[in-house]
View 1: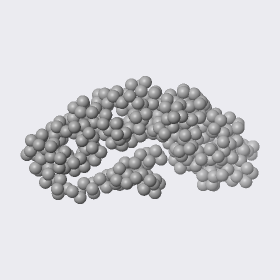
View 2: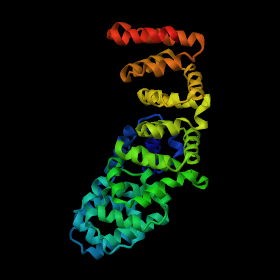
View 3: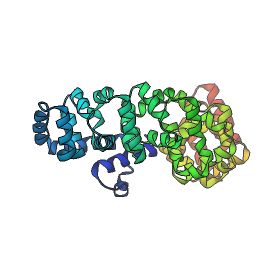
View 4: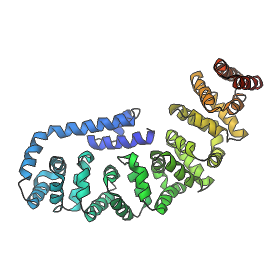
Length: 385
């Protein structure tokens, strides 16, 4: 996954460990999926530490009236231990006890409750109670907990909870912390399209700059078709908004998240992006190319380069000249895969002499593997580069 996904995972891990996000900054290079498995292992370890006590309490709670169990939970067990106890009891039993607990206490429980053991419970809770818990968490701005459970909710409950959240920025922050990104396509389709458009429009508001990563997370997490649809809605907001997105991605180091979104756009939308004045800066292009190399998006980059004007290609060549031979080899392979020889040689001829010779040498190494027609084209382009 991407930097945004890793950042969201580190926030959740910090919550699990009870430390600050800054204390876990050294884990940034670790893949998001690895961090997620580690977080699950930590949760299991912390649970196992009190497993004997929790099982004893669960056996006792099975025989107590629900109202008495709720009273004991509030007065004696507190929220964190009650959350662990809930994982040991049948979901219907926990739902009965929850009827006697106030929303703030249930919100406290939710912060410690493992979603892996709560799927059936969430289905049994009344909608009004879920909305009350969501309202309490929203008041606390606890987007981490809301993101952990939103993927478990039925569609009608998602619609009602979303309708009770007036600020699209809050919806985006919940999306950023969502526990099940694979369900995001479906969840977005459940929401009214005007809410999604309003959320995407936040990138046009400088005062909402802190939430731009959440907009990018929304675009990054969804599947290709929805990625294109949402990305093109942002393009339709105009060049001023696109420039803000580019500058935000550059400032926050989020090119690995943004590049797949741009790659999914139609040719017409891509042309608008690559013709932005900001894209022509060689320093910014260099950072883009480093991100492209990291996420192996060279085929997409060559497609984008085909839309660039002369001055942007000049900047691209200057940025490419700073990269290693190994990276140039990956560019050449992408040209082979996409048959983008004209585009890549137009950029090659703009390189400084030494780098141009190196790039041509790499391109010509493919000659023995090509059919006669393609090999002839490659020789012709090499001679004129």
